[in-house]
Image (cartoon, helix red, strand yellow):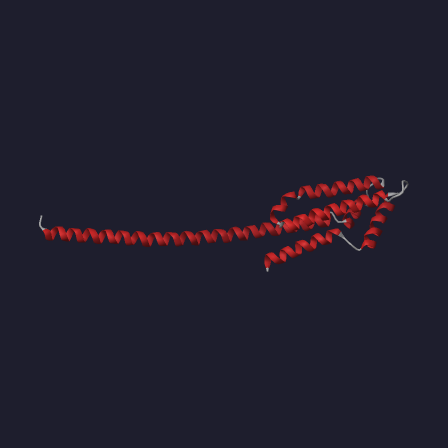
Length: 176
């Protein structure tokens, strides 16, 4: 074999190696760009799906607040038979059941919002208990429900409205 053949062969091999290296670098770069594009598309889709889940959670928690509001409870139990103590216990049970049913929604809202919802629940339960404790022994269901309405009007503070305002504020932050 002569030197010229070896030089030609070395040139061809070197050129081939350079082409393979260049192709590898280009394909690797394209692969990384494609991976970044796909990853960002997946993240965008996940964020979109997560936003839907968050919205559903806000809706569910707003419904929780409405169902556990004193006016809704009065309406719900106005036709129930029982003493003020029994009606009070039924209301408290309904509040706790509804709240427990929605515990999983806390993963979709801020800790501050969830804490507010827990406080609203406790304020509502305390409001009902304290009203019931103020009732005379011979008070009727109608007396109890009337006292709830009167105390609500006198205080001017409706706990579930605080929770609804917190949910509205968080939704505004999410979408603005």
